[in-house]
Length: 237
Image (cartoon, rainbow, N blue to C red; front, side, top):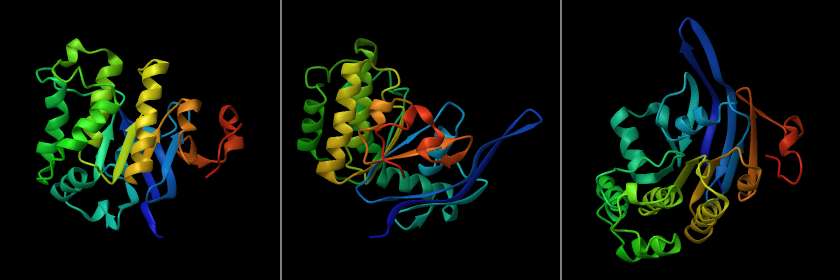
């Protein structure tokens, strides 16, 4: 089976004033279809930049991101947008919910934007119940706890059954109980729907929900033993 996601020699540098700040320095790896991979590393290691490149939200200075056979670098902006709508569900640390809409509409808007015409009402009910949102769907974000808002954001990412779920620190603002709910749901969607999941996290316990851990430091992929806080009980890439 070929790789479903491929990062090939990715470089990305940001210009800060008159200074060039390298974020990625030749990152290469692959993810198989249906795999749950976590990416870990200290602040400034390049994790979030990698997330944005894999999701087609920004372009690399050089290198390629290939998703299900399509090369993001060869696509126009409009084609990249269509690709994201069709194949990728995003979960961010910030919930990014629309404050004027209730939870139900914040989830359903993903179905409207996708434009694929496939609205599975049974699946909508299933994921909202599994995430403990059944009685909170008529509430606006300001009436929900932080944990509930993140669960709404996760439901929004999953409702279209995307082939890939990209999650950037999805438990970063959550307590232990809500973190476990979100992580279990990501794992369940991976196992039951065959979704490929790539999650960025700084939390060792969250990282262990994945099948495999990729360690980053200073824009490079490193071996676990080069990142001592992660070296115990993890699976190397």
